[in-house]
Length: 462
Ligand code: AMP
Ligand code: ZN
Image (cartoon, rainbow, N blue to C red; front, side, top):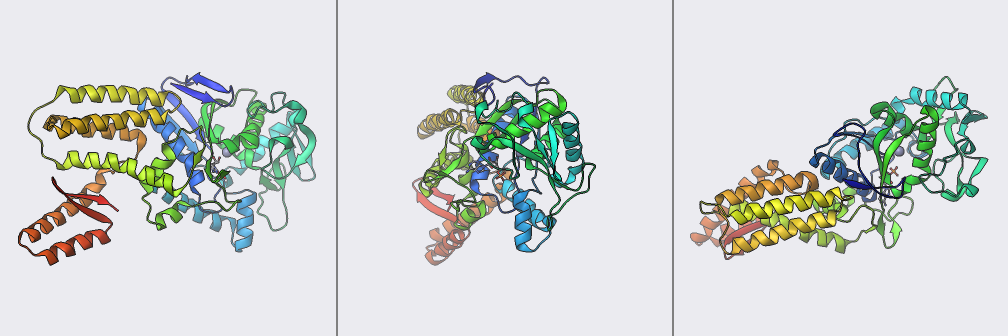
């Protein structure tokens, strides 16, 4: 497999530290509000990466942190007049609901920053002892001039560094590469923790340095996030962790580009965002949102609009219709050798495309070509019982990576819809059109549309 590594600035052959095992860390949500679908672009990309690694036979250990103390969470708790824990618990719960809705597979660990404060203070202490950190008033800062490789991830011109000048805020841009806060001193009205280095709270960057290596060791294989995390967050994580342990922090850095709206990054601060919940309230199927977020290569910008959502809807519907037809149609006994051939070809192309830096467009293209070729055979009645089973299981296998098709839990729904369609057919045969219409309207209210076609009645979700 090959991935584009932000650190080297090129595509590299992926080699895991341990054979067939991958350690993966992905920066998680800051739980001060509902995540917006820009955030979910990052989480869906990471899900695709993880599912692809598994598809390629790796065992993945995945850790995603929860940032439950930082400038934003504290501000939110203050303005809501609530405790930090009350605010963060609420949004953590919402986050898990949302990732389930988007069929994002769960990580192995979701460490919370507030449960690792001691380890963070310990790391700061060691950094100070080694001369990389210093104290100013009650806070501690990292001296960027002491780490000669500072800037290697974000490709910063060393002349632009401003060591000695300090920055309190966790977020700033490349032109402001200051000494950054490792630990922030206790302030009135802010939560704080007692520690060996004094009372206060951790900086945002040290949270990820501690929680990633605690669960994955150092170095570990892959670290992900959105491109906005490259600087300063990931640059600072590297500085802290490499100076702390005198060894490389991470081998591969993968970053996804932004979800944008009319040319600018979707973000809370710009107000140009939709939460997943906003879109679901508008009647949009979450799997269509997943498809949209998934189907553009992760290193390209993705423009969000209702037109692009509609295109995703029709692409997804094509695959769903195809699967439904295969399940509902009756086939004659037999086998067409072409079907197995198409499956093998498509499977090989699919795996190869994804192994090429997650080339999702090519992978999806192979699947759609496959659908077209099988549809041709279907129209000529050249698909048989054995073939239809093989096709369905091939689609399910590819869907272990894509995660867009209905799961088997939907079988109950399918069975109940089929029963209603049968009742409606019976009513129509008996010329009881009032009952037939009533059944159709009831299904419509449940979100199911019936279509009368030459081959009988078909249904789809509204
Ligand atoms: P945050 O909660 O702000 O720390 O962001 C969580 C994750 O979402 C990070 O990996 C960010 O890089 C990512 N992210 C934030 N906004 C966007 C966006 N508009 N498009 C893609 N990823 C984003
Ligand atoms: Zn992080």
